[in-house]
Image (cartoon, rainbow, N blue to C red; front, top):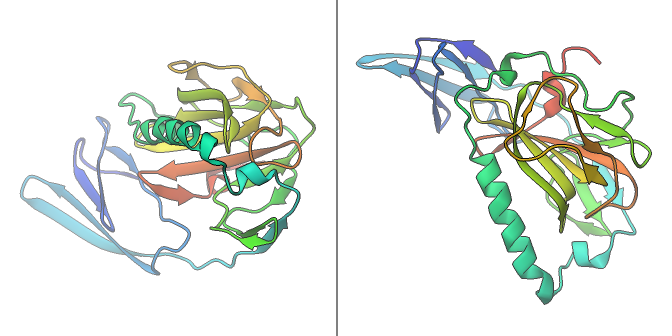
Length: 236
C-alpha cells in the first residue's frame, strides 16, 4: 500500500512504525499470514488518525524440489561461519532506508524480459522430501546467462557473487524500507552504492546456491515482512 500524508508523519502499520518521507509519501506491506484486519495509525504532533484495512486471504500451493545439494539443506559445520557472515550482510541490506530513493512509487516491471513462473510466491516447500518454511520468492525459469534488470529505481545495497544459499545475490533499496532481492545469479553487473533505474542490467541468471537449475528467485521485503513482488508489477 502506498499513501500520502504530512511530511515526516509517523505511521504505525499493525505494529511496524515508519515515517512519511519529505514529500509525505509512505509505503507499507503485509506478510503472507497477516491477520484479516489491519489497523493503521498516522500521527503528527498531537493529531492522530486511524483506520482499518481488510487484508484479503490467499491460497498457497505446495511445491516440491528434489536433487538439491545436501549442504544447502543441512549445512556442514565448516559452512556455518560463512552462513552467519552472509546473514549479517543480508540484515544490513534489509535495514537500509535511503532517504532519497523513490522507486517504490513507480510501476515495476518484471526483472526478466520473458516471464515463466516455475514456483509461485508463498508456496509451502518440500525440499529433498522434507517440509520447509514457505518460499518467499517467485521463481522465474530462464536459461543460464539471461539478463536480469532492475524493476524500478533504487540503490544497490548488496552485491555478493557467491553466498551459501543464495548464490549470486543483489539487493536494491527502492525507498521507504522497500527492498527487492535477486538470487542464484551466475554473475553480477552492479556494485554496492550504485544507483539503478528501471531496466538497468543488474546481473545474469544462474544456479548458484540452493538451486537445481538456472532460474531467478525474485523477492521483496518491507521492514521484516516478506511481500509478493509481483503485486507491484503494473504490466507484464
